[in-house]
Length: 320
Image (cartoon, rainbow, N blue to C red; front, top):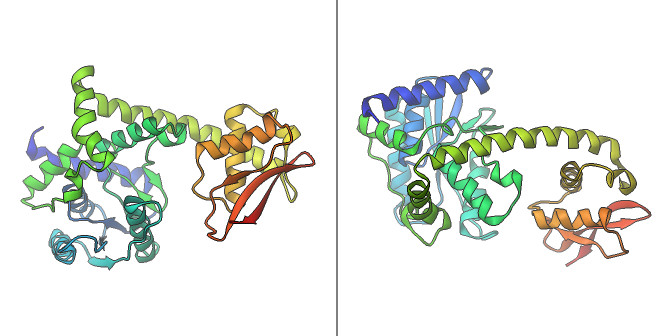
C-alpha cells in the first residue's frame, strides 16, 4: 500500500469506530506494548479523543522496564494526556501465555477508571484467532473470533491489516519494539502467522485473512441471535431448584446448549469447554441415571458438579 496513506487510514478507522461504538465516552485508554500495532493505534487515537496510554510490564524478559519506559516516552511524544507503566506479577495458571494475559487484563481494568481501553488487535490477529478456534474444535463461539466492542475492551483495528500499522510507524518515524516472542516458533500463533497463513494464501490464491475475518463476523451475528434467544429461555426455565429438563429437552440444540452454558456461568462455573457443556447436555437428552459432570470452577479445594435430580439439572460442589 501507499505508505503515505497509512496514518490517514488509521485515523479514518478510529473516527468511524468512535462514531459507532464510543460516542458517549469523552476519553479513552490505549493498551500500549511498544510494538508496531499498539504504537500506530496510539498515534491515531490521540487525534480523535484525549488518550491515556497504559503500558503493562510483565517483567518476564530482561530489560522489560526499559521497553516500558521507552513506550511511555513515545506515548507522551505522540500527544497522550498521560502514560502509565503498570508492573504485574504473572502467575502460572493456564500456562505462560494465559497467565500473562490474565495479569495484563486485570492491570488494565484496574488502571482504566471509567474509560474504555483500546486494544491493537488487527485483521491478521482475527484471522489467526479463527484458525486457532478451528484447530481446537472449540465451536462457533471460538471461531467467531474477537468482538470489536466488548466493554470495556474496544478493538478498532479489526478491519485493518498489520501491514498498515507497520507502514504508519514508518511514516511517523516511530521505532517499534520487536518482541522476541513474536518470532518464537514454540508458540502456536507464531507458526500460524509465519507458516500456515502464508501457505493458505499461496494455495487459495490470496484473500484468506480477509475471508477468515468475514467468517468470524458472520458467525458473531448468528451467535448473538442465538444468545438472545437463549437468555430469554434461561430467564423462564431457571428456578431456585435448577433447570427443568422436561422443558429444556424440547429446545433446539444450539439454543439448549447456550441455556446450559448461561446457567453454569450464573452458578459460578468458569473456563467452560465445549466438551463440558455437551456432557451436561447429555444429562438432559440421554438420561440413564448417570452421575454428574465436573465443570470448570475457580475453587481450588472444591469442584463444581452439574447433576440431575427429580427432573431438574442441579449444581453442587464436592471436595477435590
